[in-house]
Figure 1: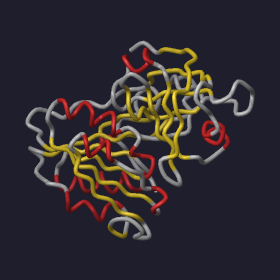
Figure 2: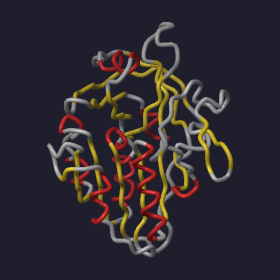
Figure 3: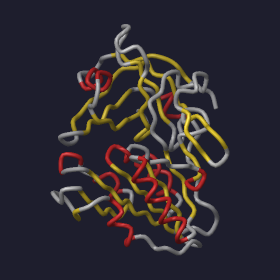
Length: 258
């Protein structure tokens, strides 16, 4: 798939909750080419600091491209300062997208931890068109990590939430919500994205119930093009790059090491 590199205007940059922001970019060529599960690589400032681009899952791709992000380090701090009309250098869409569920699947469960919800609104847009039943299990550390998920609800998603401290939803990690999953392997397919320990627990549940699924992996990247191998992860088929071979992988192919 052709990657596009160009500069685009910021349409909006809004804070959704205490921890998360949503950036909207007027990048119609990228939006037209993008598929759920892919990401864009943004040069957040035209200087040597920060030097590398930053990867962000595509949160939505319609007329514009949207990303969901958390302010953690220098790159995202710079990004949070962007205003309408500012210009960003964007490379994308990058990476291997999600596959659609296999024939016979009726129910799709998306399991996200924190900003791991980022690939799933775009995915739900596509699944809605194909009339899948959708459930989103979302786990955040505190209420500051829980944002308004009205757009997921409009797409028909049933949403269940947990927080580590119990400030929103059920108290505990997202695994406390696994009882909401229909464990019928002929009907249910899983997508997951978030911290590795969380995805490892999803993998264990899926194996126990013989459920198929995919995981979107998050890694620090340098080139984002598969050349530097800096985002390599261990899989059952050897080491693979998140930027090129992923971010979407077969859930059972991944090896999560503690």
